[in-house]
Image 1 (cartoon, rainbow, N blue to C red):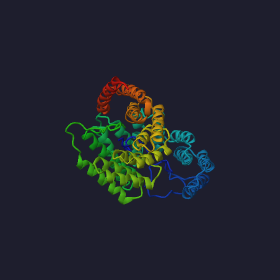
Image 2 (cartoon, rainbow, N blue to C red):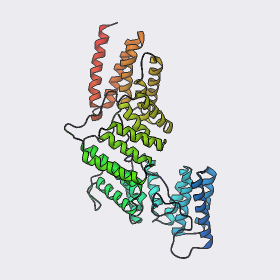
Image 3 (cartoon, rainbow, N blue to C red):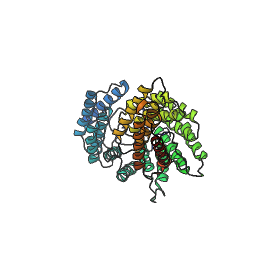
Length: 445
């Protein structure tokens, strides 16, 4: 069962109007000229007001179109042309916000860069440019992203809650152990930055969510369950010998979730995180309930769909797992984990009445998964199981051929798995299964 630990690997990419710190989550958009020292020329104030009024109107009506985004951005760009320094930075940043409303990141990025050029202390623009650069590096250039977002947080005098939460998120991903004035480890620094964010805005839900994830991951590491769990048939991930669940830390994580829910019970991500905590505590019923709440509140929350599917798969709720995996694939058709999970959910439903249809469907999903990530070992293991346990036993006269194919797939799995600890049990079982297949083939027809 693979649980998607939302928050550690993801980065917030939401934009808010203005070059300064993010407003409280509940604050409405502010209409008016930028808050800058000195006298603002009337033409500049009017153009800002026009742009912010358009932003507010489209936000409330929910009618953002490509034309609306370009038109609103153009108003802010006109304001930028009438100004310089911090005022121009604010205008360029708000133009980027307008483009982002339509997901036009290609148009947003140059406006962010122009904002930083106009005012190097435009910390929100610097933060988002750092996140874009991290995406460009496929998540590998963590050190540079952390340095840039830390500069953004410093430039905001630790008042930009969005920067603080993104900084904590990336520190949790890196998990460095170098000591500095902010702490002994990245985890300590992340916790401090989340506490800073909540001190600035005690209603900022992403900070609560990330703090709960931090406690959850701390408990997982203490129990030896950190890292990716492989989707392997009948292959539960085992903890280190003697490791015990850190119930106290998990209960602290659950408390953080409950505090956030009291502020906004309809915010889907916090229910997803609460589900992860319940799963770690062994309360799978409670986990399913939280994941389903998250799915109901936001059907586009990919992590909730995946987690609901994984938990259902773990207790043989194959039909519900299939529905959740299909919902996840509707959001991300090229996700390997979702494609492989769907194959397992389909395989679990095979019986005599649907044998041909379901084995074909499961095999099709395995082929798709293999094309998405040919280096991943799990696909070969699960295809081998499908051939040995189903196609060889119930597929008619081709049984011997299916066993030979299964043996070859088990061998490929062993080669690809290598000495990775998460595959150790499955490697041992694969070797045992290859031996069983040799015995069966030696007996002849």
